[in-house]
Length: 262
Image 1: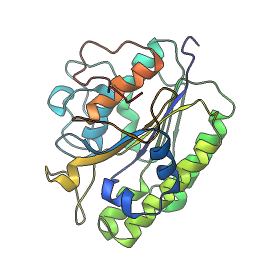
Image 2 (image 1 turned 120 degrees about the horizontal axis):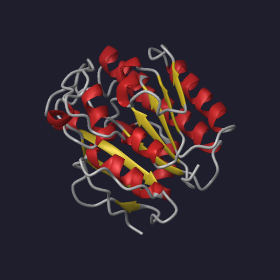
Image 3 (image 1 turned 45 degrees about the vertical axis):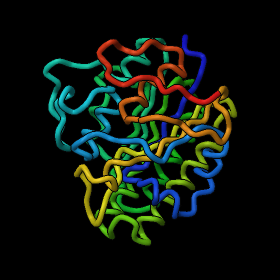
Image 4 (image 1 turned 180 degrees about the vertical axis):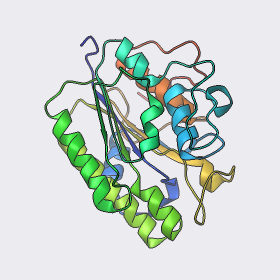
């Protein structure tokens, strides 16, 4: 493997920044203190799970990748994705997730490991994702791993965004992420974010509650406790990941690597 660094991207589906602030989140608090962060990142419209993830992994808006709902359709003019680009750069890649539609975030024959479980409806389901991520990463070299937790979004739809159950979902995801981090080498680059927020029992609209997301980055050269300034888009995450791994970004991408405080 030619890529010498390892990076883990954690995503908590549907996590609003004010939900992160209100829930009990010792892991996120530790990450914010150790790295750079913003609670004012913006996702794309429609602020729905698959369009947002496609924009995160392909660094273009939905109008370019063509996914406007949670149903995947092949791209007419394919854009290189994050996983394909890392694999092409010589790095091993893996995904751990519990929402099956995310299987189309990468093209076939580019993932070294893919773990999907239909267990998104309980906090224990997110914990099972964490357990399998820990077990695999302990025994394999990798450049990039995506670890996704769905229960918080499920709780928002079932009980309401900012409800007691929703905040408990964030706390559970925080605990899951903490367990994974504690199993990793100290020099592993860590990024935590969300795909969208939510309001009442839904999301997908241009309202701030749906569109605003948190972004936390822990990397060796990043100043502890710093703030990521300026506009931050979900489309900037993939270029930032490639910059951290030392891999050039595809020319087709719209996002740019973030200038992190050093």
